[in-house]
Length: 75
Ligand SMILES: [Zn+2]
Image (cartoon, rainbow, N blue to C red):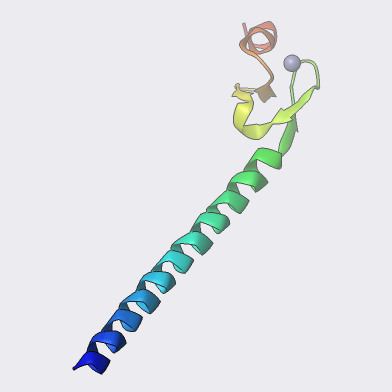
């Protein structure tokens, strides 16, 4: 009976550890994807300054570093 209890405890710990490891790996993969998109640099259509794609402002003719530059090109 005692052996069965120990076996169950070990099984639960192993299951929990595996679930934790899988979620940790998933988290790392998401972080890597986030880094890749953040590292993608695109030039401003007005001044040519490079900035991360997720911070750029999309316009009809291209991407811009700020609303001011977008309005200069696309009034
Ligand atoms: Zn600009």
